[in-house]
Length: 209
Picture (cartoon, one colour):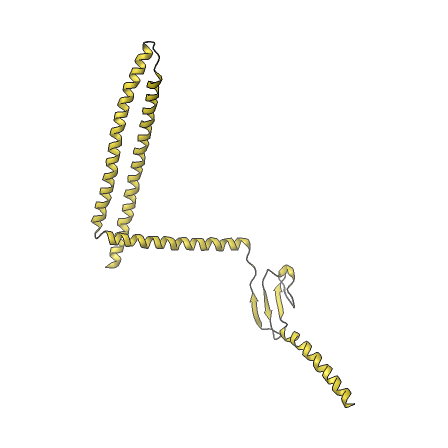
């Protein structure tokens, strides 16, 4: 009799040990369904797996929160935000480096103005040289065009070499005019850059005082 009771006790104990881990480890999961109603169970349904859920203990205490998966639009927005942040950092580094150059190169704002004027003078000299070349090219073109017109009036054909030379000079005049236009634009950009540098230089000097 005692042995029968002992065997029953051992079987019950073994079953309790087998069941206990499942009960201890199991957690209740709660989620919100399509109707906005909170539901709970041992497993989150597949259609709500990416929506986020909470795990609660048998006493109703939240032990873990699983955030919902981010949408492609949200992931892209985060990516763009990171790119923008990196761009701001890059610009800050470039500005810091430029500030060091300004302070290390110039001791007064007047020196910056002198540097600007010197650079513009160099550009002006190139423009003047090119404009003189344009004048000479236009003079040569005029001579050749007069010669071509004289031949046509006399009923003689205009030599191919003369026609080619007129076209070549016209092309050179156009190219030189383009060069002058580029240098004029360069002057504007140089002046604008130095204006920004002067403003920044004065700000940096004020910050040091």
